[in-house]
Image 1 (cartoon, helix red, strand yellow):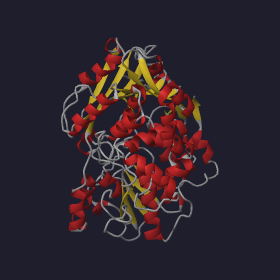
Image 2: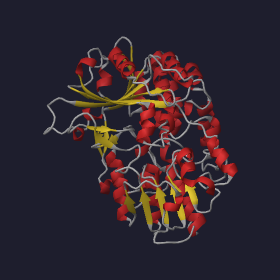
Image 3: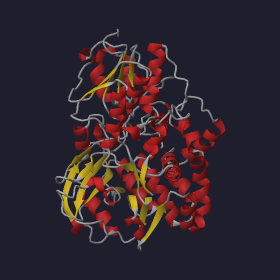
Image 4: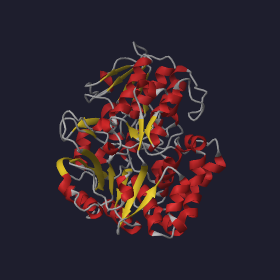
Length: 505
């Protein structure tokens, strides 16, 4: 790859592609991003799906790793329109009998709610929650790199490797504590009996205590738009509605970074990649898919448990055993009749989601999804609604409009979501260590100047931008002789403190 009007090009304007472009532009490079869709964002997009004036998040919605991201923290995104909204409670998990397990911002308050399991919860969450900004850069980097804090990293890793069902059952005695941990672990889309299935629970639980589970005011799109605004302020360019089907279509540049999963990346790069590397990418394993349901209601969800009415996110499935059974069924390729359902009720706390000029008073938008077998094209609306109705009698009567997207439809919406996998590949132990292949710098490909920067590279899924940041730093060192000195968790740049601007609790 030779020089041209741009020093570097990025294919894909998801959060990782935008983060890579920003890091390159921050070091004075001329950068251009090409995005096939008509808007930036990838899995960070919003649109009016059910009615004019009702803003729904198309894929992801709530971002503990967004506000907790070392790279997003360093950038002045508040100056480019990003405001975080914190709900009164980050998350609640209803149980039968009108009860709920609750994740509060305060670790002590959460522990008090858990009664006899309070001390055990503190021991699980406190080490990472108390030192979040010190430890999270080690956790959001390739696992084959030496951590800056090896003893603390080792302590987290030993707990994270334990299967979530085993850790919950051995450390927590009550059904509330066990259910709370199980719901957090289920975000990994792994059976709760799998090695390393505790990692998501520990990371997301600690994030809730350290930084919260907020969402962007006005919708997920506002985060993507803020990243794009910052990039253009640095001199970068973004072109939407420009699909790239072959690397030969791109203008000349010294580096090309692809925010793509292995399958679309193989289609793009083709025979330019050595046969052995192509075979390795074809062995990359994807997780199960998701079924997404967006709802317009004529009022809030009538949860029996009061805490669920005050939470931004609600995990719906019941006990540890029920969550484990749901995830095990999906791993077998079966549809869970009583699925683990994630519900986000952002409009309760963010009036910008609803336009009062175009909607009747009292309307609410609800985001929900459940895990589904890979490439499943079944409408699972009834399964999802039945689970919510179980803990919120009368919920179905409040539904005004629905928008559905199956696991197969998720890939049609975004080809990076292979078979409906929204996380860029399964988070098995092997793929945590070798993602997408076993290489010292996994962002490099065998083609000089060609890099991967998607969620299929370390540290994997989640909206945090760290895959893009690490890939950009590899390209800066390899192609431009620039070695950024600041660790991604280091001091914030001037003005970046405003990134933490929040509304709500």
